[in-house]
Image (tube, rainbow, N blue to C red):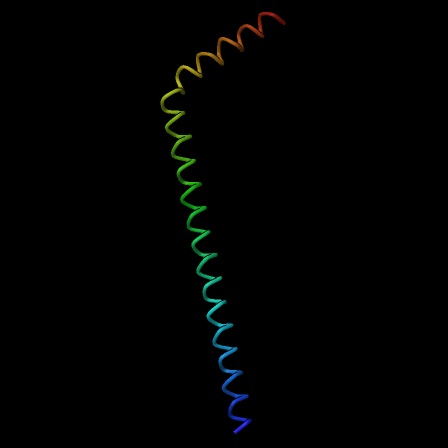
Length: 72
């Protein structure tokens, strides 16, 4: 009878360990998805900013470059 309890206890410990590993793995997967979405959102904001401010920024940088070239 004692041997049966030891085996049952070991199976419980193994089951709990497997369950913990599954939870940790699913949390890591969720973190990866969250970071991927975050990077995608940042890329979208950067693309929109370039689309909105790109032309005026290009003019500003061109004027600055011309000023530096003529000053030097």
